Image (cartoon, rainbow, N blue to C red; front, top):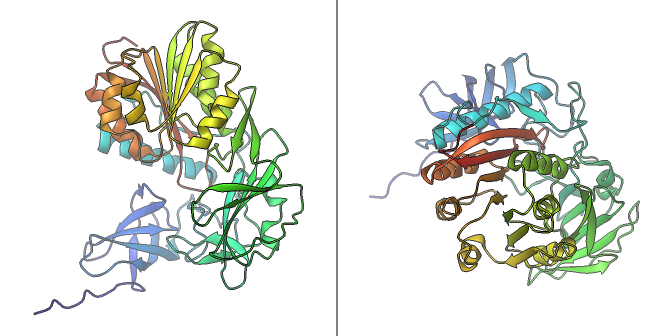
Length: 443
């Protein structure tokens, strides 16, 4: 006999008490039957009416939106953005929370991940439990910092209007303005143009220069539109077959400014999104490592060379830095950006493949800024064997950070300090910098 199909619970509503925050921009609740709900648009301690958006009978958990707030938290405000809320734009998770409450929630997530995945208390991680706002972002409730210097717009295939994706959906939320977009992005007027034939439009506003860039991803067979925006802008396109990025008009790169240096970033390559992020992170890393003249260092997942340049500048003429980066264009940019440092070398390839081939058996300092998935046990084990006196781990995901800190502990390293920065206001994302040292070393 065939099993009966499982009943979908989408649309079902439950009156629930909201429990603690969870990683990912939602809070945990339970139905009267004990089934777990991951509820968005809620805050801990509230009583809400939660409507299921994903899930079925017998599932390990359900996803839901808080559609009616029956007993609000003192941390709740009316969302400043008119496009936020259940079923609307999925870009921001905490528009309905006061700025200070957002940072507390992020701190609670970091603490929970450290304890659950690494067995570390905040005290054992050298962390005071606070999440620091970026310079200029400490605004009163109801005001939104304009921080996002890179915004990827989705294009409605029917109307050609640019908007933003709804949460866990391909549907496009039509917006006339993104409140967290940096002024340099907003002034391009992407939302006011017809982008028929495009799948997406990415807008970039560089920090420290007037460079503006638009990257178009056409639908198969579509012709590129004549791009006439409100400000001078370079235009690139994504090739539908190869996925490569090609110049259409203007420079194929933007110039980003950080740590007193100008960095070329080509073809929409990675750069920190918040205008204060690069300087904030360089400062935290250098304060933690305290580089000494003549030391050797690794910069892993080095991108266009932000940390490698900062290290080289502080290690002096007798110091040496090796950077490793998988992206071909990023390596080209890094070599360009670091050309005035003769003792800096940048190798292309995956860290786990390239590092063993270098023959390096010891190093003084290590910086790693891995992708969201983290570095992983094998790479961490290799790094721990190199005997660095200090390691700086830059992380955009507290779960990956916690897992890797556990691996470092297995390799004989302890966390000396951890600092957390709210470089993604209104969202659940948070950036951390952990400084590690050999466990036998005194504080």
